Figure 1: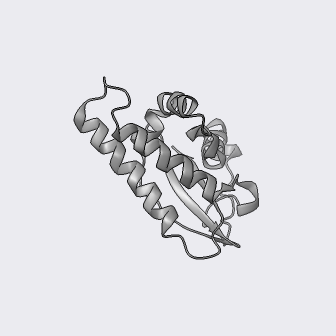
Figure 2: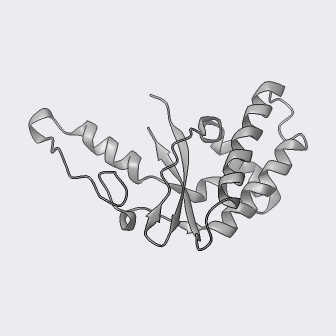
Length: 147
């Protein structure tokens, strides 16, 4: 089963519904966190929200008779609401991602193949672009951990 990050933003009670996979960022999370430590910036994983993963894991643990169809939250379209999720300061996340992106582009982890580095830079660029393009008044975001 593959894991990924989805970057989502929050403007008031309006949550973005982005579902672009950032699987390489998730797969390299430990290494990227170590790079963040080197840069003395917040760890990438400190912006992760595990609400969706926890719900999916709980659903897997239920037997067929214990399963509940559940209700869908009208704001999120998910089986959980905005207030159940963890949200983080968008400017802090943007700063972290931009510094991390520069570090990766400058040759971080020389063992990383050029193609993989390019893909990682694309994922970081996508996140940075989405945070920069967020509508005025958007001050929260997270990296939702999706299974």
